[in-house]
Image 1: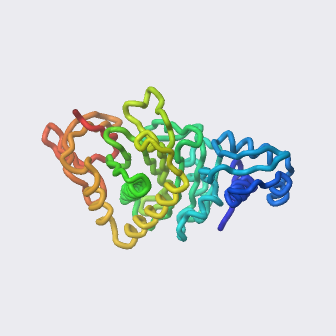
Image 2: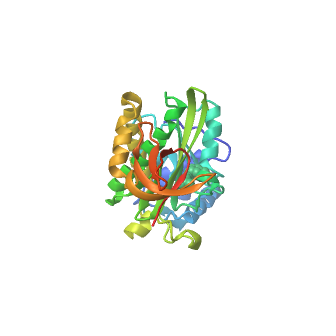
Image 3: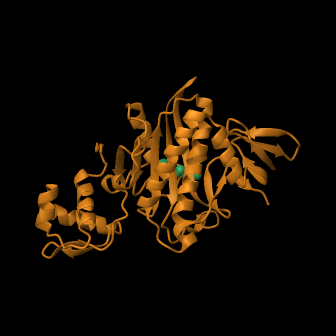
Length: 334
Ligand code: BTN
C-alpha cells in the first residue's frame, strides 16, 4: 500500500503503533518492544499513547507495565483503514491528519500537484471545515468523518453535479448497510433522518471549458456526537443519536468507498441515467415535495418536479414557472 506523507499529516510510526496495538489486542506489550518495532524511544511511545488516549483510544497500562489495547481503535489511520478496504483505486493512497484546516483544501492542492485518482484525505478534526454556500462545517474531534476523495472523471464539467449525486447515493447505501436505517437524500447532496441532517457533501472542481482536471468530493458525517451544539440542534443529528449506539467510523468509511467506487464506475461506463434514476427513486425531494429554495439572489417556494438528465432538479415555482435549480439551498416548505 502506498504510504506517503505530507507536512502535518500523521507520522507513519503512529500509524504503525495503532496497528501494532490492534494486532495484539489481548496481549500486554512492553514499551521497549513497541519502541523497538516502530523505531522510536520509549518516551515517545508513552507520549503517543497519551495522544491516542486523548482521542478516545482505550489503552491500559503505563511505561513500566507495558500497554494493552481494550478494543479495536476506531481511528481512521491508513493502516487500520487499508485492512478494511476492497481493492481498487479509491483509498489506495490515504493521507491522514489528526488536525487540519479542511480536507477539501488539502485535496485541491494535491490535485494541482498531480495526485492520482482515488486519493483520500481524512482528518480526525478540522479547524475550518467548509460547507456549501460559504457555511462552516462543525468538525469536532474524532466524532465525525471528515474526508475528501479526489477523483479525475473523464467527463465534461457540466456533468460534475452527477458526481455529487453519486457520492450522496454511496453514503446512503453505506449508512443503510451499517445501521439498518434508511436515510433520505435532499437534493443535491444532504443526507437526513426526518428533517435533520447528518451528512453534507461539498464538491469542488478544477476544470477547463470542456474538461475536468479533478474534483474534490468532501464528505462530512456526524457519527458519534452524543449531542449537537444548541444552535444546530433543530436541524442536525448524528448516527449515534439516531441509533443510541456508538458506530464504527472505520467500517462506514470502508463501506462508503466501496459504494462510491461502484457508482462512479457505473457512471463512467454507462452514463448518467442510472444515477439520476436511482436518486429519483430514493429521494423524497425529487418529486412532489414542497420546498423553499434559496439562491444568492432570491428565495422562492415551489414543488419539485423530478430531475433533469444532467442531474438538476426541476421546481414548479408558485408563480407557475418550471425551472431547474442550478445553485441553491433547499429546505422543506411547511
Ligand atoms: C454542506 O452540507 O454544507 C457540505 C459539508 C461538507 C463538509 C465536508 S467535511 C470534509 C470536507 N472538508 C471540508 O472542509 N468540507 C467537507
